Length: 305
Image 1 (cartoon, rainbow, N blue to C red):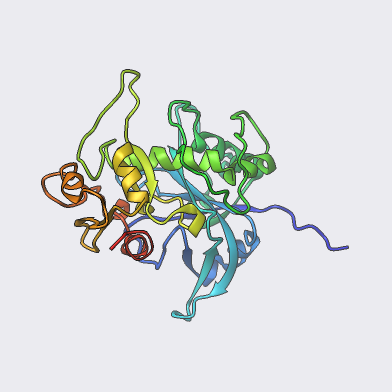
Image 2: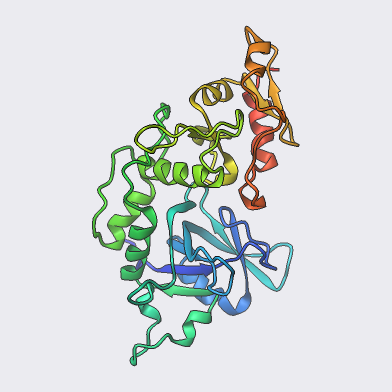
């Protein structure tokens, strides 16, 4: 009988202007000095942290599972933490490094209650208690941010039941990270935040009487086709635009021009809902804009030419 590996969580520090070849949802590049620490996290979950010196830092902003640690084939001095496909998840509520009372990552405190030098390490081990605390806060508790209601195809390996938000140990927190309803709720929250709750096709921002945005979060490359739960694979769309996008009546060019299918029974009517610019109203932040590979996939596999 094999020996079960002890769960080892970690923290990977990342910033969008990093000099390293990072794509947080796919890979994390690091120098040899962090190899031993990174290898401890192989097969387990890590939390991404944007450093405090970054202006407007998000703090702990995402979680992902490390599939394997490999030598970087393009750089002999570097290694890569390969992220398990489909595991990456942006927190709907990014967690600050420090709150009003103390720092969130208690394992960084020394015997005198001060922050130790470990806080400077780009890759470090995270205690199960700190992991559970960060994930609990990151997943949020907003009941008004609901998941998509059109998710009809089960995703392999992901649970469908709603998970309760309460103080849970790390092992039970992991079950939430693979829970479809929890992932959809966080995906929707991040996409609507990035798009200012405005439909990217029509340009309309409609808030109902209860203060809830009418726009929905649509995956460009669907989850059932291994599309990731990341903002750059998402669009904020009104119900009508979402329906047409999913059925290929609307698509996007690589330059984010809005395409209307000639196979629609009334293309001229469809064009009337498109904002006057004729282009997708994308987020200002480059990292949040639709990635070309996802847009191309939708155009080649969904859009009705």
